[in-house]
Image (cartoon, rainbow, N blue to C red; front, side, top):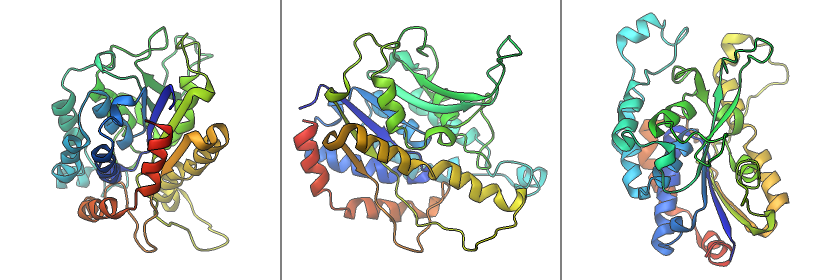
Length: 308
């Protein structure tokens, strides 16, 4: 039994439904699993899920965002495409659909009104510092853990928009872009946050922490060729995927070294040839089937041993 438990949720766009189905299955086996969480960390779609769970929602409630509203979220108008030259000079999708759905879920709820602490990565394109020597872009992690570092007054729906504004997919939102460019797997960042005594004088010791990390599934991507003489246009989309997905394994390795048996990572790999993009709305049914078919026996053993 551990004194402090972190649930970390990766980004992955529409594949967040996989995370939710897995969580729903785990809660069926261990009804108290989510009630024992001391800190939710989530990036992009994982950030939206983390905010919903911290609000007290059941994973089943959040599934509708993916199963029923995916076409609303990833929708673009013909007129917008004309102005964007078919996404050459504009984002693939208008973010108003996602914003409307997040407002329905969270209303005016602020981070400070959530039942459980959260830690949500984003990237601020302009910190607007009054000092020109300090004005820059920078990583920003929204949290409701108090002190001068807290963001208690920020509406949850806005944080959800900030963390999920994936470059080329959605426009920036109030100057923020997707937290995946900083920490698409926010596990090790959340671990550092949890033990930071500047933010929490009662911060747990490393030995008191158990961390369960969920990925949104791994596609076997690669770029064939030894010398890619590409420019901006060719690198735009693959570079986004590299930035968002390329460093997830690093955080996994770091958490394994820090926590050893107190760490668990659940991130299924899709079969070769199955490439789930952030906006693969047509694959929602497939993702649900995958999540329902995964053998969770080892995960459940770990939860019973290290979480309960």
